[in-house]
Image (cartoon, rainbow, N blue to C red):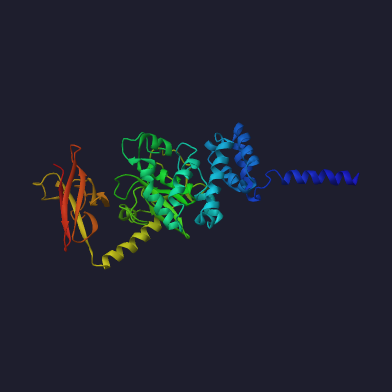
Length: 395
């Protein structure tokens, strides 16, 4: 009788301890909670856990544990297994991916989604597309540069405000050949992840001067995050750098956020659907402010840059007082490279308040804006040795 009781207890212990065989115990409670929310689709999620390769079980568990409820109720086993297998395939193939801490791989490479875009099975295709660009790269720096500089020609997508919606998935953007800054950032993030480069979407709901939102991409290298864009310049160098340096950490609308698959300190504000709270994010404002302060100190000390102020007036005849000034978005270019952008001061702002750029001396810059009739206006200005004020006109 004692042996029977011992056998029953042993079986019960074994069953309770093997509910998720091969899955680290730290996920068990999270999986219980997730599966309870999945409804009928729990069958698919359990199938993914049970049928995936033993080497990839933690990856499947991580995704199920932290995915939003919409995905718990919809994603199928095949989708999850395919995504996980190709993520680990990249990790096993590329040296930079092999070297990643598990925490970075799981949260910044493995996820199938960045924001609230439609869920698509992009990873096998993107692995095939972008592996060829990084196959001969020796370092993650080289791989980042290679993906960044080839993505546009590979996917044939360009920025265009005529895109169908802001939060497009990769194939929605590729079908149209156009995307918003958010759609481009999602594309670039997925391309990086497909070849084992940790990446995430970052952005702000509204710049400090209230001229609108912007999203971009970040990549992780040797313990640090760097920003880049779909149309690349260099890491931690972009037209919006000065604006990012003026972000306000404590202001939800004017802070900078970086997306996260697992829960983080806040959520990513989506300007196209303010009711969505399931996209997790970190508030990374301080990093951008500190980066720009250091950059600004450097270029002010190098003697090669000068401040250039920009003021917008209604007409060339109206420049006598603040009432004649107009608020307008202005972008500045040097050749094809955008150097910055901002919004000019309007009639209610102090006369000494002006949009300002730090520009390199002895170069010609193009200031681009839209007039009252919606026409694009261009003003070419030669920046010499002394600070200057550029005056633009709406009419």
